[in-house]
Length: 398
Image (tube, rainbow, N blue to C red; front, top):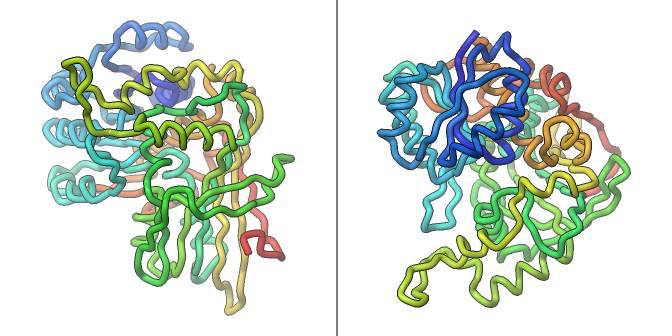
């Protein structure tokens, strides 16, 4: 069916590689590329069939172009760092190859999360006759598709959306992040922001809290209002929305350690002078913290990520909750990664399948909610992310 170049060798790339390797009818040939060849080769050795590997500095567009010309993929599946999005998109433009990622571009020196830089590529991708699919992980990604599915099947008008992300897993460590520490801490320590009546409203970081009773025997958890990138595209593509918020749960130990690190300057992203060297404190902290990939064997518990949606159907108010529950230990047994990596990697693989099989096609730059949700939703359960939908009678977010 097609050839895919996977860029990255972290936890999410691991899941993508395992899932693609197990679907040879779609992914006929695979190349995995990353800065550290040994890491890529070790991953390749664990897969069910032979794949090609390559050393690649994805910050360098010329290197990406050279590898694309050599391997000749039908799709570049980027699951490395969000700082590298634009360099890889430039390489795809130069070679006429489709592109997919799981997170919006972030400038290295500024904690800013928005799609503008990538949306600006739309006309160039359209002119080149190729497709770029943005944010095809879980959140962003599946949460966007949940909203599209809800609008297509259960609502005439959506008024409010609350995206709710709960990681009820326990790795037993005082402080660690379940994905890249640098990206995680930048995101969590940023100001909160939500959409209300046609404008963005900012809040102080982690200053708004609610308790939500999660399904799947998870139970009540404190969750905090944050800004998350999928809201930017959803309010544009579902214009009836009056309010949209994003919530994420955190344990008290994580929050306490984060506040201490912030207070002593360890979460700063600007360089400081130390013994004649320029050091970025957050990058130094990343080097000290556990590799998220090492947490898989010790992480127990579940994740629950979904959308609480309210609106109107046939002239009557409707309340709707759609979610996935994922077990950390089951994920590790299947692919050797914890559920945070799994819930991001599986949707990326499904999105790549949608593009290669022609179920999702277009010329230009797209967010996933702009495409037909049905074939993607049909595949979620088949590849390990079953979803549940309910129509609650009471408002658990009141």
